[in-house]
Image (cartoon, rainbow, N blue to C red; front, side, top):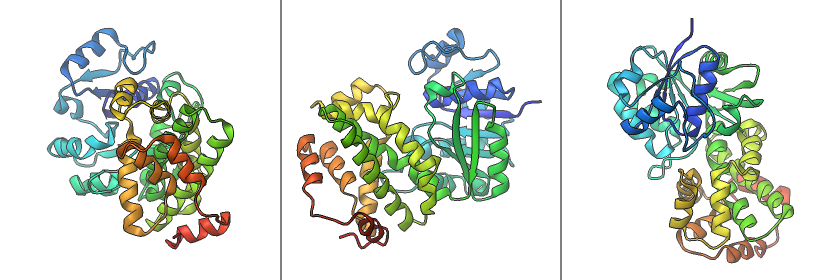
Length: 345
């Protein structure tokens, strides 16, 4: 008998996870914020905006009624944008049944507080903090919903919880690893979106593989340096939530952050970019939050800084690239070591 799972958020990832788990035999309720969108999804069984051409199983129950979606749920999957996490968790507080498990799949940082999303959830739902897991890794919804082989990682404070969620999501095409480093897994998933904006900007400027490789490599250094200062295990950034998610997001046209970067590199204003992408670009707010954290902890993050200037200070992308290339000369390994200790200046 399948587990009763409520998936909150019917964007591309929430829809893909609903399809994935329903195919495994779980009992899925998919919450859609808009009643009109819920009606269309129910009638067409297709999320035409986010996953055109992929049909939803008749077993997936769709509703815009949060109470109905959460009724009797054993597991709640949060698949809303990072900026909505606090609002949605606040709304579901009186509706969750005791003993329920939470799985957050959003990747970002809360801009105002700079908190990781599990910290936000724990503030809003403190009684469920020990029953919260984070699912991350290189996993484009467009491929998961079609059953293409994918490997991800689930992190939780408790290994027992991590293994329970691992078993819920694991299939022959969706391999799930566990990790006890919640901090590293969350930061890897959030910060890689900044670097994906950068690789997109470079492509929009007409640059090639050399530039992309440099941004990915030095970007991973920035992610790890900030992560270690915040308490992450540096080895996590060599895994699926680190280099794995970074590579796929920085190189794939499925990546909305990369696509947004391409438009920025081509000279479009941020408002135009968001209109063309048509979906939430998590890397934008994450860039702002990560920059605040870099100042707070004295960590030098030059790629993040230049992308911030392009996004919020209208710095020409070509100038941002020149600023990065003309920085004072450094020793690669010493640079990594010193930055990780907060001595990178």
